[in-house]
Figure 1 (cartoon, helix red, strand yellow):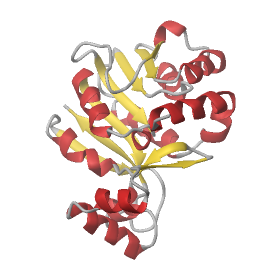
Figure 2 (cartoon, helix red, strand yellow):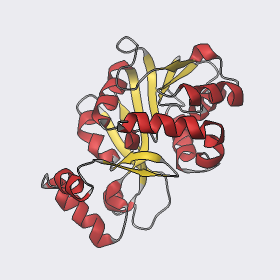
Figure 3 (tube, rainbow, N blue to C red):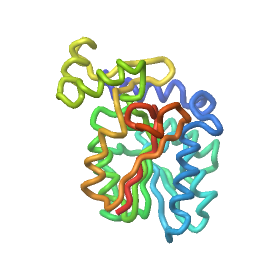
Length: 237
């Protein structure tokens, strides 16, 4: 099996316990959702897509906070979407089983497009972000991890230097037996990812781009790049 098949199997095995294991009130994604609602409170919204919606937490949250909007989600795992319907009572018509690499929507189909913690699970995050930008009319929001703020300070600086020099991925693959991904019982298949990997791509399509730390950590006010392990990356068109 390739990495995607392994991850789908992981979701199949954990679907009915997924929310209990991965979703916690006031976690980083909950903070991100609250921030999105605040940032968009003065924007006229009619539609929201949460790509990689999993068990539907984001879709449910936006339905409750923007009742005037149609909030829908897509995910590659039919097992997680089944739980989204049973747990959050999200109508099946608002849940689409498809890859975030190829969204079945026209350009500018949604006012907002969001993702919560899926980019560190995909081999090509730029493909997902490009699709988000394509179907978003007003803004996109990425709530995800930041490799550069994980580990000790020397480790963080070393990772940044290796990334800037173009050596990060060759070295990581060499040390990881030729693979770009790892596996854990708690998260399945995961890749080394930082929201700052997507910054230039979003900046090229949006007028305003900024990053907000979503986990309290010392030093985030000095440098989110080095000190914020999780951020909300916002792009307004």
